[in-house]
Every structure is written in C-alpha cells, then in structure tokens.
Amino acid sequence: MTQTITVIRGDGIGPEIMDATLFVLDKLGTGLSYEFADAGLAALEKHGELIPASTLESIKKNKVALKSPLTTPVGGGFSSINVALRRQFDLYANVRPAISFPNTKSRYENVDLITVRENTEGAYLSEGQEVSADGETAFSGTRITRKGSERIVRYAFELARSTGRKKVTAVHKANIIKSTSGLFLNVAREVAAKYPEIEFQEMIVDNACMQLVMRPEQFDVIVTTNLFGDIISDLCAGLVGGLGLAPGANIGESAAIFEAVHGTAPDIAGKGIANPCALLLGAAQMLDHVGQPQNAERLRKAIVATMEAKDSLTGDLGGTGGTMDFARAIASRL
Ligand code: ATP
Image 1 (cartoon, helix red, strand yellow):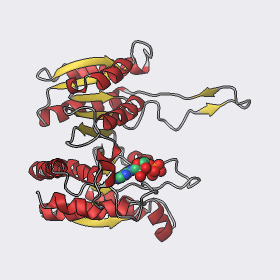
Image 2 (cartoon, helix red, strand yellow):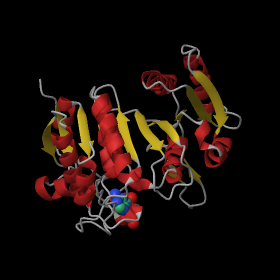
Image 3 (cartoon, rainbow, N blue to C red):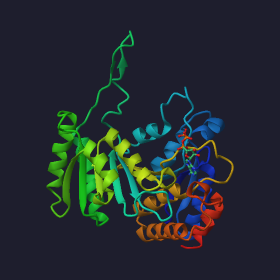
Image 4 (cartoon, rainbow, N blue to C red):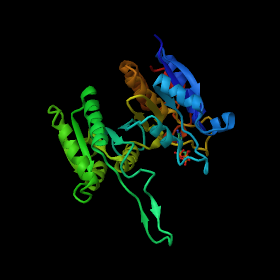
C-alpha cells in the first residue's frame, strides 16, 4: 500500500526548498504520495488561520509530515506555530543529527553525533512566567517529570541501539539544579541500566559545551532536557557548518514532523538561491522513520558526493548554483 505523507510547503524560502526536496525524493523512487496542507502565512492568506483544522487532520491521519519553515506573524495568537504543532501532537523527541560534510566552513571533519532534546517540558513551559508589577522581578518555572524524562532517555537509547551507535551522554546540571535536573539524571541512570550494551556517560552542561567545541568526536548520542538541548543542538549545527545543513525531527507516539532547522530566510526568498540540504536531510530522517533506511542512506551519500565534487553548491556553501541546480546535481548522484 502506498504511504501518504503530509507536505507543508511553508513560507519564505519554504516552497523553493520543498520543490527541490520533492524533486530529489521522486528521483529516489520512494513510492510515497503527498498530501499538501497549509500552515503559517500561506494558510493565513488562504484559510484565515495559521494552522487550519484540515492541516491538523492531515497530520493526524498520515502520522508523518515533511514541513518547510513557517512564518509566525507577531500578534498572531501563537508564540510559534512550530511549538504549537509540537504541543498538539505531543512530539516529545527533537532529534537533530550533526554530521561533518566535505567542503564546508566547519572546524572539524569527524563530527557524527545526534542530539535528542526533550521537547515538551523543562524550562520552556509557557505557564508560570511572570514579571512583577514594578518590573523589578521576573519568575519562570521549570517542570520535569519522571514520565517525560523516561520516555526521552529511552528514545535516545533505542535510537542508539537501532542505528548501531555505542554511547549515550546525558547532559544535565544536577550538581546545582538538584530538583529538576537531578530528577532527569536519576531517571537517565535507571533507564541506562536497562541497556548494558550501550555505554552511558553523564556530563554537566557547561563541561559538555567545552568538550563539544574541543573534542566533538567523543560524542555519539546526547540526550538532554529542553533548554540545554535547544542550545546544544545549535552549537552542534555550528560545528558542522551552520544551519543550511541542519535537519531536525520532532517525534511522538502518534505523529512525526521532519523539517529544516533554519527559518524562512526572508532576505533570500523568491530568488531561487536557498540551500535545500537541511530539508533534504530532514527528508532522509523521515525515510529512516518510514522504514526506508536504504533510500535514506542513498540520499545522504548523494549529498556528500555532490558537496565533495563542489557541484552546483549554493552561495552559503561558497558556490554559485541555484536551489534547483543543487537538487539536480544531488539527484544525478543517487
Ligand atoms: P525566521 O524569522 O523565519 O527565523 P531568519 O531570517 O530570522 O528567519 P533564518 O531563516 O534561519 O532566520 O536565516 C538566518 C540567515 O541564514 C539568513 O541570512 C538566511 O538568508 C540564511 N539562511 C537560512 N536558511 C538558509 C538556506 N537554506 N540557504 C541559504 N541561506 C540560508
């Protein structure tokens, strides 16, 4: 039976990089069929709302979505559409690989790690934030639960097991934030004990940042809470050449959304010069997720080979190619 995925073309450079990505996926012969749905500014213009019910229905039904960046208008009733989608489907695992690619401005050639960030709790709760009437004091709560910690750490170990990775590092600040970070670390230790074949390492977040910059090759899978994960995953994207090569997956029990980490890049939108690689790499994560790991690997190898050959690279990678030139160069190497 043909599997259908929801495709959200997005705003800014979104439609351009999505067209390029679907072009490559079609050449790959994934057999997936696409149900197009709107979100963001495009949806506001067409349907009068940022996330139409039909889009939520489509994701709910298909369980897998490939999504381009979205614009969240200021005062649109959402602090972020992406966050709203993650909440709606309880997409608790934010999975961001950082892998060295040839011919980038990256400082290292041997980075190959995945950050697994808890996406639904921690310091990013919208409730409980307050500023006193005199503007002198602000307060923000952090909530960590056993259930939330258990499922994210288990996800990290299962990912390590299924991809043949050898080590999981839990990043925390339990020495100072003994309540919340302490609970996360305790649960991480309990879960780790169930995976004796995978090495478990604990690392305090400040040390982890230094180690990532000095010796990133020591990391394999990193698992951490929401705020630390947000910061660390961008640090890792920087280690391997920036946001143009950084994909991300948001995964829950009932749905998964795959995307590029970068935004809508309004400064270059409509010019046909955006780098489609981050979304293509997000599509590779999606192929792994839908049980097509060979196609995912073919796609990643074609991207690497194209970068190695410096064939039609886009401007952010030092080339002069357009979005579709780059996509065609990748497709020719599948
Ligand atoms: P948003 O408000 O949607 O987050 P932004 O411009 O603040 O948009 P990004 O979209 O992430 O943030 O862009 C940051 C910078 O990186 C911009 O200069 C943009 O042109 C560049 N950039 C982002 N994505 C790409 C891409 N895929 N290819 C080339 N350049 C990109």
